[in-house]
Image 1 (tube, rainbow, N blue to C red):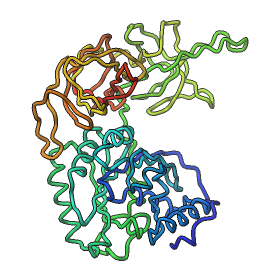
Image 2 (cartoon, rainbow, N blue to C red):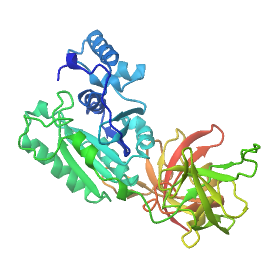
Image 3 (tube, rainbow, N blue to C red):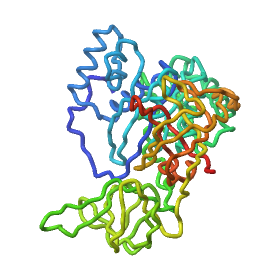
Length: 431
């Protein structure tokens, strides 16, 4: 489709309920922003005024083509430098599914932004320039995707037009990535040869790569199964807010609002409120649209309990026979985001689900080389580096291993002097 055939904005929509969050990653100039722009354009998600702006900006820059990367590179600094330095979020939908895209930075300097954008993703799309092959940033992003336990990974070999749509180039890169990633915990990995600039295998099949037997990217995104990826076994409900309207109509209403982090909650379930340990039952589950019979991840609901128990923000409601661990000492992998390095003995605020405490770094056990996956001894953890640390927390936090629950197994570290988030942690175990 040519730019002149863009949609007029009257896109026919059908009711779509399932949401897929996915993040893009890759080295600088591998074509992440162009891919997202092409995906939006070919799926008819761009309005005429948006396209006109992109066309005019492309002409003013002298690009010589319609630069779809401009749809996502929203910051002026990004457009001037030709790189993505922030996480650009975009929403679109097809008749089959809704999507939230996090277009994350490719430059090593902004790895921390990539961690932030990918932390809640169901799927990660990693791009590789077919001419340049696998780079250190490719390995870094694949490793971070595995560390974040993103259930599905799609590796797009981009710019296939610049290597003559050569099947051998694609096969060689598939082998190289597969061989390296075999040492990681990646459950589902898919490879797709594409040209984001020309739209090959993005929304429609490419006539230039008849040797490729798989679906185009959008078809894969629409059909990948994400429901089994969520933990429906362990009930976890961090309390965000105590709801007491104190109106004449609702003077006796008392509910506990939050987002379901695991399991399925139903009226009548026997639950325990932690850390206090008081047992009760769920009497009702409320939403904006009224009462419901079941709540599951990642629904935001308000629970009403059968008994008048003491519940506060930061408490966790779970099934009485399946509680998380109340831990004071945590072993975790940490992606460091601070300008000042992490060192043993340093103190930070820790935010875990809706609970806050203080933490001290008892030990830095090792740093991880993302190229070799070797564990290196280290005295500090610098910006964008990843390592294993042991923390001691001022009050118990209710955790699960990150491999079991991505919400109750994660936390952030905050520099109390600046209030900056300096670390993202994934719980490995507790002492």
